[in-house]
Length: 277
Image (tube, rainbow, N blue to C red; front, side, top):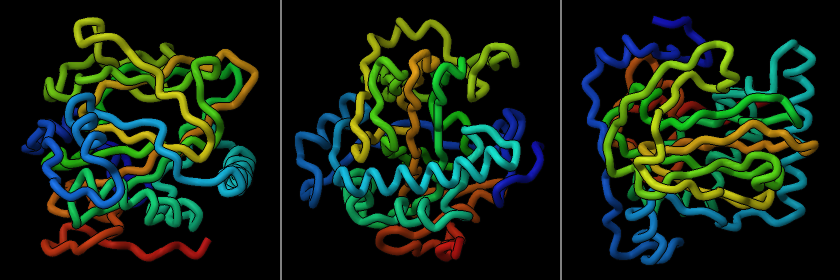
């Protein structure tokens, strides 16, 4: 079992193999969406993602970027890299406030149901020409959660486009269930440690190009990744993770959970308070 960090165990493949998880896509069944449209729900079921949802104004996006710049300066001064700001909602009020923002939560609630837990906030910041990529992977591969009623909101802190290595999706790949993967070697420059090979069999990739303040939402089983940022521009995004409140967490991950909508009737999650920092 890996060392403890950020209030929970970082699971190894061996840890996850010991947990009986239900790894399949659960289609959205919502006849009365309040924020998204029925066409958007159909698109999510069919493709596994939504993109280009405008949430924050330009002024708000600029303020969020300034807060991240401050955090990044603190982390780099402490000798950490630009990918180190994880479980940020448990430590930084700005991340907690974004995770619980009703404008984002209302979109997620239309996909996951009335009772929603926010359990993750991780900045993925690709500095100019840092040489690091995120190989094709499924989020559910990493998480000791069951069943897989989880989605990720990707909030653009900077404008993200093909030039500075925006995220890419493989539409429809979420319906194939949990796919086999290879463990990445240390020298591959992969921010994560998994790669799903031969992705051509699952279709053609599409760009998740976003302006700062926009979000995309993708299923935890959708294949996605991003190339190295070879431009002179930074590309930062904040991943916000959500699940239905009936999802159960193992290896201490219940400590990550914050109730953002409805109720946690089963008491699966710790519902930590807003941090003061």
